[in-house]
Image (cartoon, rainbow, N blue to C red; front, side, top):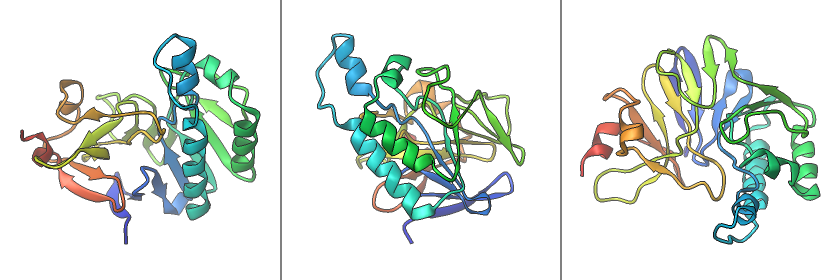
Length: 221
């Protein structure tokens, strides 16, 4: 099996190799940091021109994850759009795809720092959501125990091997990898990220197979 199953705050969860989180009992699929419209936002602000295909690729990958799990609920953990203008400028094809993916299921947009406000694309818009004492929000609050968040786009890997997008997991926090095609990542060795997790935590690497390695093994240089 390519998934990695684990228990977090009494919930049996599954980290999938594509970077999505699956909660079988609730039929809930969670994904973070889609950053739809990133290439459009960069071009609009005079930055480097990137091929304008990341929204299409990200939605294809999301569609595949939904087809594989058939969730009753999808939770998007913030920064789903690269900014509010990108949300307004999303193509008709992308809107149609999102409408089709939302049909027949609950869809929750958690507000992020890039998209801190509602967008006119279906679903429910929330600052955070609590399910079975687990809080879903965009940016971790270190005072919270039992929290699933995103924002940091973590990546990790054992010393000497390439780093990959990853989940970060300890007893009280779970940080998801970024799902968007042009999102990049922040190394677990970065000071902004390395101090957030307990030393006994694990990094669950994405790729062909979800593989858990100790965070401590990824901090060695």
